[in-house]
Image 1 (tube, helix red, strand yellow):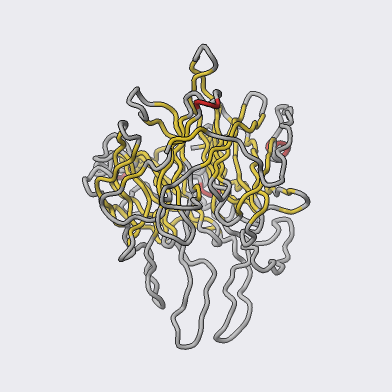
Image 2 (image 1 turned 90 degrees about the horizontal axis):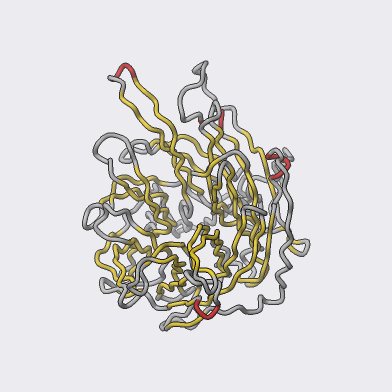
Length: 509
């Protein structure tokens, strides 16, 4: 089905007129407060997933090709809102709202969107927004494509629904679509699942311009990532796939992929093989939600990982080994209620754990055979006391993560951005702590030298929101941090927020 995009009312919350905020050349401490924001209503449980990219479009009657920075944010229902952001005056402007439809689903949910170039009509590639869709509690999902080329002309901003044809199994929800490198056998990786029996898979797919459809060609079943001693290992559900060039040795000169997995950790795999090949598995530690009854199995989830980023460092030369050069690769990934984990993936088939920042410092409640294992977050960074969290507030629920660096500094500036639920948006300065670009002059460990430089919260109607997803964008020497916010996810409806922060003199990777 092909429909034109449409704007619609936003559940009683009116989008305010965008205010132009003037910024002077200030230090980070002065500019870390949000430079721009907007909010609207949506579903708290499924909403607030982000995508940010600079896209091309044809402007006005002259059809002059221009570029603009677009932000896509889901409302937890069937809509994705589009905002443009002007880095010249730091203005966030609401553009439009698109709705998705799926033939087999009455109430589809727009999931994790991504911007990419597609040859939709056989006339060459154009900027598009690809939206996976799913249904909460039922099987089935699809993919919608929004053509952005002539987005300033409302009648030409087109949503093409039902753009997924799966021949290799009875597929369910679709969680993400990723473009694979030119060295791969297939062009796209689609995160989904098969039923009867349940399998979590990455479909290796192509795109048919004649039908405007993704067609699956091969199936890569995601292996188990975590093995527990006291319970069965849950199957890892693929989430976001990202292409990364690993440059250690000759075996992995070509690009590899890493896929974050709900229940498990991070999977590194090689897309150059016709069926894909597992390179390594990084298991993530447990998170809360455990329940236990005498005589029954322990029930809980493991290592929900949704977002990951790689910091590419400089080279270290080992003179004793014939001047072999090794380029640093540090993988940062959020681990839901457990904070974030850092792994050295310089050698992708043998990743090494570097450090974990655990946002959960509160003990469990209760004693004996019926403890409450719900995690309680890390509290206020400005206060040493640890207080009880509100029930159901899911503190420390980390989802979004980003990284930026300035390698011209000595040591290089390294900032990590973490969207941490009720604990808000945090900026970590790990410059001295990690120093992945080479040893410092003394050779001493810096593992006691890290700081949380900045901490921010966001309120809508006097209600403090929870930081959720996070994306970064760099222009020049500055990084913009886009963060989505939502109310307690146990509520069906409520405000969803979008903020933009500026981190000057660092460059996102």
